[in-house]
Amino acid sequence: MNAATRSVFYAGLFPALWLAWGAWWWYWARNTKATAREESVPSRLLHVVPLMLAALLLWLPELPVFPLNLRWLPRAAWTFWVGAAVTAAGLLFCVWARRHIGANWSGTVTIKHGHELVTSGPYGLARHPIYTGLLLAFAGSALARGEVRGILAVAIVAAALWRKLRNEERWMEQRFGQAYRDYRRKVAALVPFIF
Image (cartoon, rainbow, N blue to C red):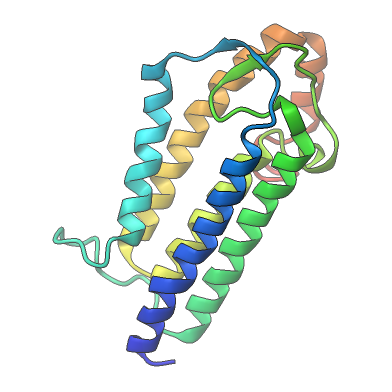
């Protein structure tokens, strides 16, 4: 695949993957339990704004900032297709986790009325599998881009999600006490069986 074809595929395939995921996510966001406690808007912005910045780093065609456009991977078909597969796998993992948690889900750090501690399915692999999937999807998109800005984008996503999961963990421990502490001891936060 030459550079022009790869550029067209990148410009089309990756937005299609992310937009399809976003449309699905938006549709299913309506089916949740009523909120009992929710993080403040400033707290939410501390993870939403970095995620938006990371997305811009990956999807703007060119960045006028040295060295963000420098390549760290060769321009090759394998980097593109492996990146596409990793992105799709990450987004599908998010979908699985979102479907599994059901009405307990929220886009913000939240405690729901009748909140349940879900520890099965993808939540038996990682305590925050939606974040695992998002991080994987961003890593795949960065791999396909093959530029330094992709590494920066993934680092920003990791920091934003880590901040958010730490807040969630505090709230979950307050809500579920020892049951959550036991769960945290058994199941890794983001990387199954490791971290």
